[in-house]
Image (cartoon, rainbow, N blue to C red; front, side):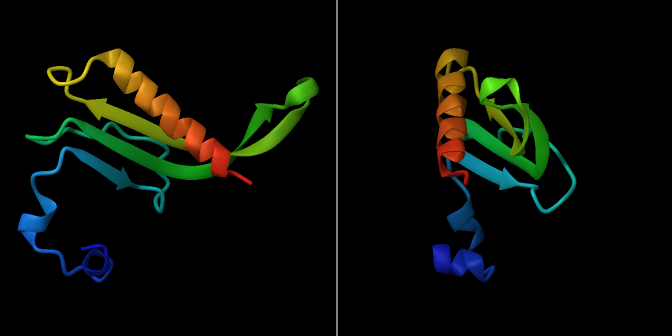
Amino acid sequence: MAARAKINKLRVTEMTGGTFTVSNLGLTRVKSFPPIVNASQICFLGTGWMTDGAVCAPGGEIALQRLVGLSLTFDHRALDGAPAGDLLTTICAEIEGMAV
């Protein structure tokens, strides 16, 4: 399926029925956006534009760091806010761990 997705050959039936979706608007200038959860889905992660931003480094110095906007929309009927927040925190930690 991944190979067919890369060449835009997935069938509609292969793209429906999922419970978690990731949408990337990183190639645009959109910093973040609130995705809308489709029927049958539980969570939708929206990723935005990656850019350099000023952060407070150890020792109180100012440094540039790559930043990306993330938005997690979830169905409160299936998932409480605390586990959803934990999921987004884990995603952030994984992304930060990959940063060079």
